[in-house]
View 1 (spheres, helix red, strand yellow):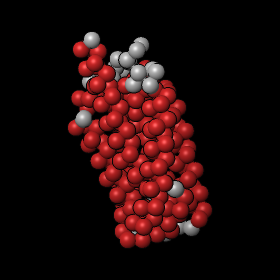
View 2 (cartoon, one colour; view 1 turned 120 degrees about the horizontal axis):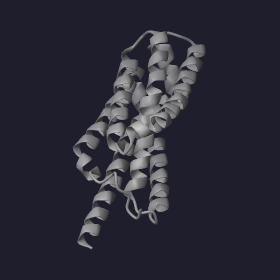
View 3 (cartoon, helix red, strand yellow; view 1 turned 60 degrees about the vertical axis):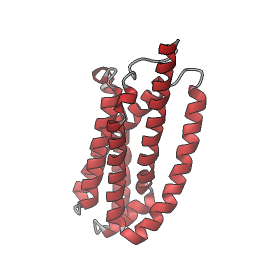
Length: 204
């Protein structure tokens, strides 16, 4: 019984850590809303609205392609969900920083396209870890609460990022988003022991 209690405590700690990482990452995720993207295209890339459309198309194409790639890599990932998530976050954060500093439109398209697989690798494996860290009976409640919390965080992020865009400038705003993702990565690295049992599922 004590062993089960410790296992439940570890798994709940893992779910809490994942939610905290989600919140940090979500704070910067709003920079991909259309208004910020358009401002970046005009200010940093020196292009018009047509390139805003190209960047958006590349972003969604990268996300779709990334999802398919992660599906194809499912066997290779195996039960290494934590490592895959951290690799995804690292790649996404670094590419976002490079994107912020880049001034070449075609390179920006390539960078946004490459972000998709890393973003999906992070997000899909994060969701999988949460599902495997919570008892089956509690999972619907946990996922519902988390979804509501993240939606609230996203709304707050939109307001904060809009204010920061005026103060910091659009390039620094994207750099801040990259820093937030890398900060969430750091939280995952520091708290990775909470996921030592992620390969096992409670109640399976």
